[in-house]
Amino acid sequence: MQEPEHGPNFVMGNIILTVCVVMLLYMGSLWEYLGAGALVLWMVLAGVGMYFIMGQKSNPNLPD
Image (cartoon, rainbow, N blue to C red; front, side):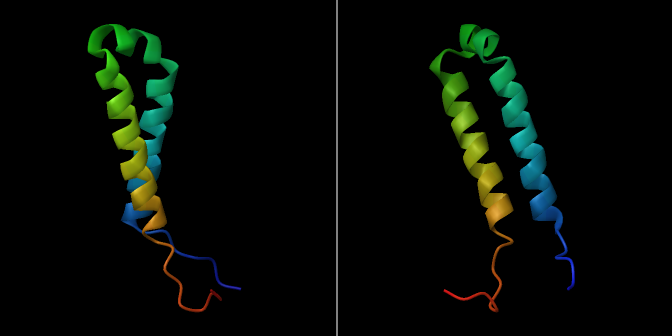
């Protein structure tokens, strides 16, 4: 079987999700500086990261 190739969107999505994990580690101090904006920023970044990763999942050979 052939390995699927990962494009630049997949790599960008992984980088963004890595930033989200680092944000979770420092969420306490981010909350002090940004307040609820830290949580909103984390949710937006996580959504964008998942969008980039899932954008590569279009394979017409898969069954519905």
